[in-house]
Length: 63
Image (cartoon, rainbow, N blue to C red; front, side):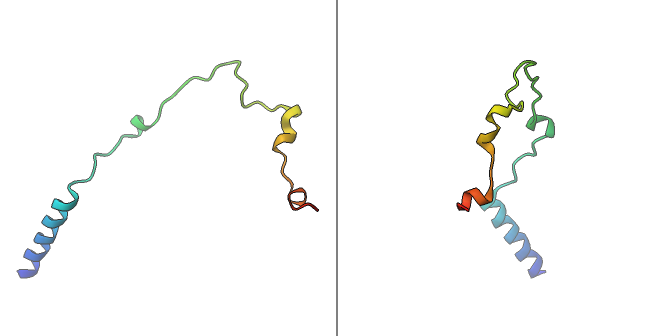
């Protein structure tokens, strides 16, 4: 019986200290759908600028 009262007291102390958990956020509220512009091309491959993103371990080490 004393153990149950101690557990209830501990729970009351935790509730006073931390309060309650925040409300859950629905998945629909976390995402947004946006249409892409048809002629944007910002992520398109451009062979003239591809050398800027080239990475080679041998070149990085100076070999």
